[in-house]
Image (cartoon, rainbow, N blue to C red):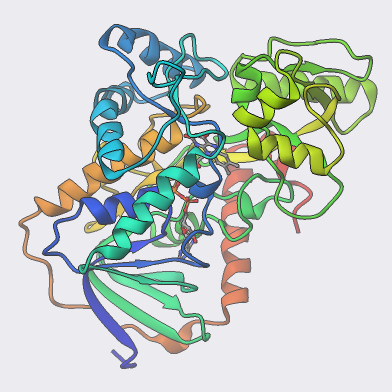
Length: 441
Ligand SMILES: Cc1cc2nc3c(=O)[nH]c(=O)nc-3n(C[C@H](O)[C@H](O)[C@H](O)COP(=O)(O)OP(=O)(O)OC[C@H]3O[C@@H](n4cnc5c(N)ncnc54)[C@H](O)[C@@H]3O)c2cc1C
């Protein structure tokens, strides 16, 4: 090492979203776990998830749930990953409930399962329209009490420490602009998706796919980097910044989409890519940059109770969604592709794991079924943690030399990462790039 500015731990987890936190909690308490995060602990997409989390409601739903996931994914899914996710869902949701996560119930005290696009049955648990916040805040509160888990905030991973395809740790910038190395027996990448690279996205701006750029730089296998989900319905606004999502569960509860003439033009509960394409066609036809959404099946009071955040956000723009036509437009939302893993989060580099939206184990195929993401993140984060726990291999001690001086400014590095990722998307799918990425600098 040319610089003393380094620390050592058993496992470093990059990202404090639902995937990173659940992995941390599932690792054995004998392990020292360091979780780093680019901004504050609750600044992650996991906190934004509105609609809910899928679960296998009863065993008779297995075939239907499996088929809905495969069909939404254009049958490009890895069937084994889909099977594992669905089979593990009751166990993982049971763990969440044991940990104190509250899901909404109906008048009889039974769980109130809702439905979203391309689901043939109601199988989605939710906590009002703040399911992600309820799950992630609960996990975070518990993780903070664990003596083996340490959090470091406002710290950005900028490189992997690697030699001969073995990972030894990461390089990062801390909140004071200091560079440092974290050496670890295992590295778990849980950096979320890539929305921050797009002009219009539902994601936080700092979620910029840094793991993908590093995978491309270090020859780690990636998969389906052009499988990027555009969500059909975000609240249309001329303001800069993150686009506010109007969850599919609003359409699941009866909201309709209307064109400039006030006519319905599509089945609102089709898969996201189909609905997005239908909206884009209507916008082209009428020369507009939005269509409209309206929820005629609920009163204002009912909508306010079921969708408090969404109702409030629409009201702030001057729309009561049960009475007014709310302008909505598609925006980047989710990354189906990513760092290629098996069903245990294992990547093509030794001692390196990927979980959550960063990982691509093929569960979503070409298009993610609504509310499968939180579940996928939880199921495969636990499997990665279990794999690390059961790994008895002797970790190499010949740590490669780390020259911290060679790294330029964080801003330069982020710019470089963006170009690397955008070039890859363009190479894989010039049409997608031209349609959704060509307004990027
Ligand atoms: C508005 C919205 C609504 C959604 N609704 C639903 C829903 O209803 N149901 C569902 O299943 N899914 C939903 N999703 C998708 C789901 O929330 C995400 O896919 C999931 O939470 C991803 O979790 P994650 O842990 O992989 O990543 P995230 O929660 O995005 O966390 C990524 C973490 O990585 C950190 N990070 C990133 N880069 C670096 C770096 N270089 N160095 C250090 N740290 C870094 C970030 O700071 C953050 O802590 C929604 C997503 C959005 C945006």
